[in-house]
Length: 337
Image (cartoon, rainbow, N blue to C red; front, side, top):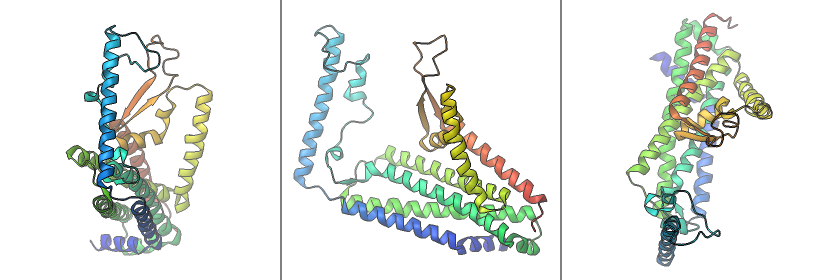
């Protein structure tokens, strides 16, 4: 326990970590102030007008649905001026995934129920960057300055020391993620109550928000471990930064261009960013017209395909696991002086 406490204290005492926390707080303040200044509680007349617009929009959907049914039944001739889908259920208001609501017609009003999800994605993106940079700098600085050697003189077990460092890192990042989320979303919930509208916050809303947050925290912890592992392999913080930059330029940008020139099908399946998005959102739907260009079902194939969270998580775990295992294996035998 002394080693764990010492590593947590060393991590929290690092100026880079403190700077990143300050930047996180600054981003919170800027976002909060911008939201408060750009929002107001709607008046009764604004709400009444918005409700009238909602009713009109729903009536419009019902009219279009009935028009489609009558055209399909041959009761009225096809009018080329309007859209007629193959299945009229696409226009049925009762089957719509989301109907217009009052908040859609209240410009300049912050609605927590509508804005909570994009705000959470913004928080996860910052925490993702925070975890990777802190993980890389935490072990990279110790390897460069000789701090690890001094620590091994006190506790001469390499794998125990490295594992404790990784555990302290993920523990601190996890706690910070929880605290940041509570403060962040709590602040905007208060704004929605006092300077805007709460919006629809039923059970499915909180379940969806909780699922996004849970997947986001897992992604943040994986990014922290990845930065830690790459920096351990490269013995320097810059190794992790260089590896990410090289991957983004050479593979995500350069290889994508080459694959498109060569007409390679489903290029997105070869990109790590696709699996990050699939894990974070639960699933991603992609389209590639090359999928059906040479197949026997040409003309019947839609060219779309889906990547769900399960294979995305498997690939992310395999990548981070491979880097972490390699880092521990190299650290066990490497000359640290």
